[in-house]
Length: 298
Image (cartoon, rainbow, N blue to C red; front, side):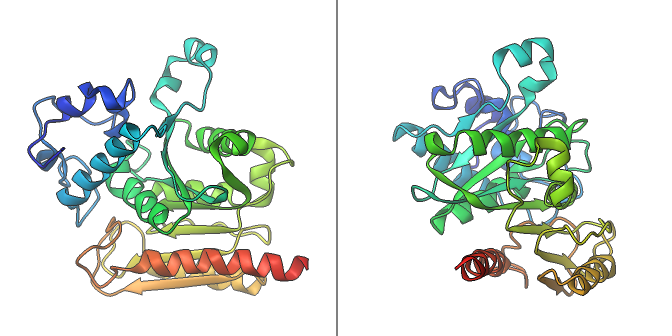
């Protein structure tokens, strides 16, 4: 089994991770092959992030490894081989799949990284793993920092077009993100923005779950939104998030905002902090939007 002393190179070369092992780690950060999982599980690698836990890194990789050994496919290319030949940068993209129950709704988790790198190991993999434990299907997107919205749109389209193969409910999905990833989720959670990227055949997300971002754009076409942030966040001012959700409420859009005293930027799941357990509140918020949709329909 993988442990804190396992090296990055061991993971990349592990046959269970095929040719996608390198995408478990930020391709835009300098990570040497002899670094261990303990070495990389720090803010020296995942800059702007706090409360990084090596045991969670180990749990994630072991979970993915076990899934592959059990015959599950855990990684999906969102671009075709021809598209990747024409644009080699698209080789640095894909979806890691944390499978829940067959035909359950899905979530797409988008890590932040200031549009400089993708901090998935702390800011989307842990979320996807926990969502899958609740029985929902969860995807963590590895995107290009120069084309984040294009890649997220493609990921949504891919899952929607392959929903039967993936065995996911394509009607009641949610978009999740932290920091830069939260901006991506909020933007593609908007009905008109989504239509601009993917057309009108794909429905709007039932909920957007966003952490620590200064995104302030609002529209009556935004999705119901859950947000959380810390008061000591020097990158995303918590008042900005509160004000945005207040303005969405004035449009009649359901929102929920949680502000945690003393927390800094990038706390992820908030393990060991006053924010620990926030993800359960966020899942409940998503579930409530699905229930409301069903109630209104019938």
